[in-house]
Every structure is written in C-alpha cells, then in structure tokens.
Image (cartoon, rainbow, N blue to C red; front, top):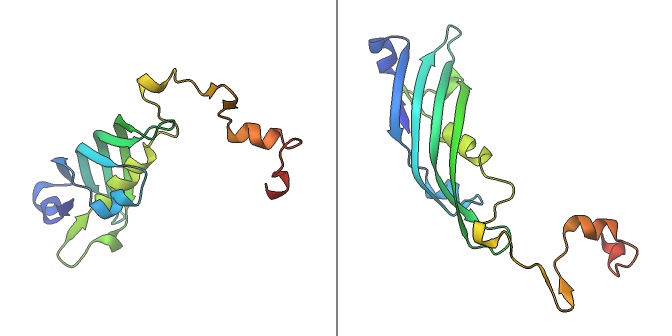
Length: 151
C-alpha cells in the first residue's frame, strides 16, 4: 500500500487511511498462511517533529492456516492494533511511502501458535496399539527411547 506524502503537507499533520490491503503472494507463500482475505486497514499516518513518521491504526482480516491436527484449512479472523515508527530514509524520490511490509509484519504476529477446527477438538488421538505423543513426552521419556542418542 503506497501512501503519497504530499498529502501531509497539503492536509496538515495527519493522513487518514481507510483501505483494503493486497498482500503480495510472494510474502504469503513464505509463511504458514495459505490465503488472506478481507484485509483492511483503518488508521493514520503522521509526520513527527524528528522527521520520522508514525503509523497507527487497526488491521483486520481473515487468514486460512493449517489445522494443527489434520492440516485441513482453518479459518481465523484477526484484528491487530498497529503503532509503528517509520524512518525518513524509507521515503523514496517520488515522496511516497510503501507501508505493505509494516502491515505484513503485524499480520504475521497474529498467526496463532495452535489452531484446531472445532470439529477436530474431540478427535481421537489414540487407538488399538497406537497413540499420538507430543514432543514434550518424547523429551521426558528418553529412557525407553531407542533414538535417545539422536535427540
């Protein structure tokens, strides 16, 4: 999302932003997010006294991430409050500023560490002669583990 900075001079000390955001596919492919939709940013860009810029606002949207148990698509709605300082050195010769990377970093922070669909919350993780064990169980039960020397 590119912001024209001449508006700061014309309109005063603040630019109001209320736009849908398109995150490039290259960024999404390098993350755990399978798909992003309805991403919207509402906020302000202000120029501070020390020639830096401040980006504040709220970014909302929906991400599709893998379910931790089945790897099926899991839909997760997110909201992130943003308060970023942006250096003057990021402004290019056309007096524009691209805030896509700032917004992307805030989206990445919103990816849940553990995501399970409601239909998979009660899924059976053991059966006749087998059970799913966590990494913590592997690390604490090293006595009977034939691969303990490899850990």
